[in-house]
Length: 254
Image (cartoon, rainbow, N blue to C red; front, side):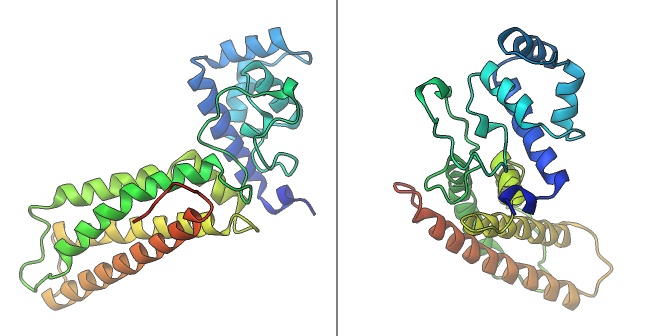
């Protein structure tokens, strides 16, 4: 059984489509322009802009054959498009003829040392942790009758935006698609914790700013529970980041 067989068909289509869209847009090409470039520079059946959109939307799986052709036309290594393919565990070219262009942040190579996907997640975590600690200090002394977010809504919004950026990044999607496989476990757990943290921060904010029919004591109890879960998830996120840090020399989470 190959690594790719452990990934759902939908996940594979989605994550490859997202990578294709990113690289096409990074090259400043429309779908029609990309199709024309592929047809002009590579041999094979004509690629249409409709097919490009089908790949990017996840309706159709970007195959090896087409992925190779698009990668060649965009001066990429095939691994930057064929995410989840067990034959492309790293973005290192096999020969001088395969030399890729500038590396994108997203590398589908869990377990391959310092991958750029891991570096992207690491950078995102360094933004999340300090803001999360500030939020904990502000909400750690909530009192019945004074349950509001006045004066620090900006902290909530900043933390939620940083978490959204992390959770919706191409790197996070690739990590989720590969699942908790060997070598991908630290990254997978990091992304799962970040998603749980996002849910609890949103839950706390909603309780603090929305009118509620709950009894003050019940609302206070729920808020304190959210604060406790946020604290635990920040600690867990730091732990996952530290595990990742061991594979990323020069990246610190202190």
